[in-house]
Image (tube, rainbow, N blue to C red; front, side):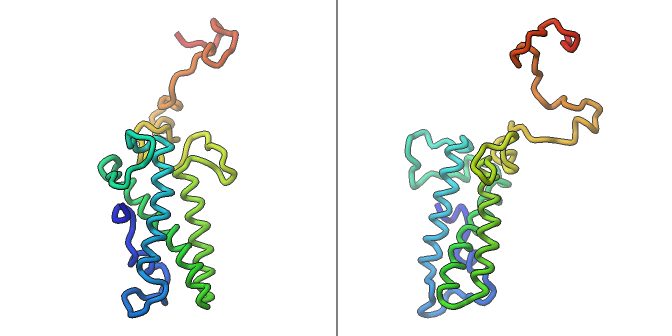
Length: 181
């Protein structure tokens, strides 16, 4: 499943002074891969909860191929999120080895990861649902309601929104002057 998202080299590349593949490397590539897998599972849970992918069961199987269920643009979003989340974890470990600049990078990567993860989850910083969903919804659901400039430019502002009648809003002016027949 990790290959769907990012690689250890991509995560290590987020830290200019860190190199992979050297003997007795610390932290090891296995640990970096664990960071990648942990973040991937977190992202899978968001995709499943939001209904962007369907596993057909209550638990997420290990061998599910999410790549077959979502668009290529969505895969790029997932790789970016996975890389930043894993890099934030790697930066904390590198900082514990005395690489002070790694902590600064880790903090920046974590901030970016959390903001983008919230956009994927469709929530704000406090965990409350965003009224129009997250900014990545269109990548995962072609029918997602996203604000667009096209209706205004085509002189049909609001034409992309579903029609709402007064009765749908619980209003009593069913035959009011604003009702379009």
